[in-house]
Figure 1 (tube, one colour):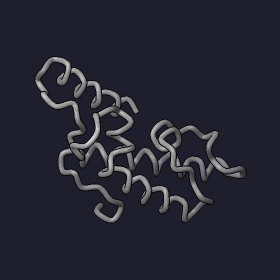
Figure 2 (tube, helix red, strand yellow; figure 1 turned 60 degrees about the horizontal axis):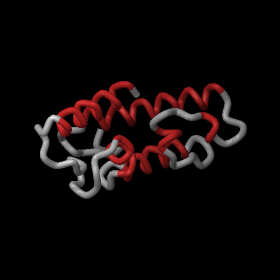
Figure 3 (cartoon, rainbow, N blue to C red; figure 1 turned 45 degrees about the vertical axis):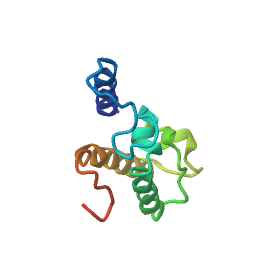
Figure 4 (cartoon, rainbow, N blue to C red; figure 1 turned 135 degrees about the vertical axis):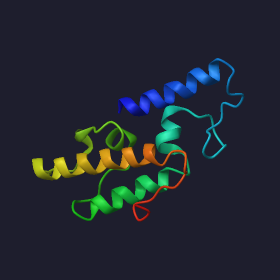
Length: 115
């Protein structure tokens, strides 16, 4: 999670120091590039998260589509009856997905099948 925040903080400092002229998202060029938009709401990234949740949901019940769950790891949103092993699998899957977003940031290519 710290890497997400640092990446966003670098963008914010560049924008405030007028090195970046545009405040919009650098991926979709639509909305303001807030932290939540860049890593969750952006139409370029959101289908990736939905695919990750669908793949992980094949092993478990339906998982919540929430940035609290996917980005911050809030386990209170999990369905009842999730054991420690399943929770560890979900955590590893979500951390891997977040790292894939960062690794492919400049390429703009996201997707579970594009690995």
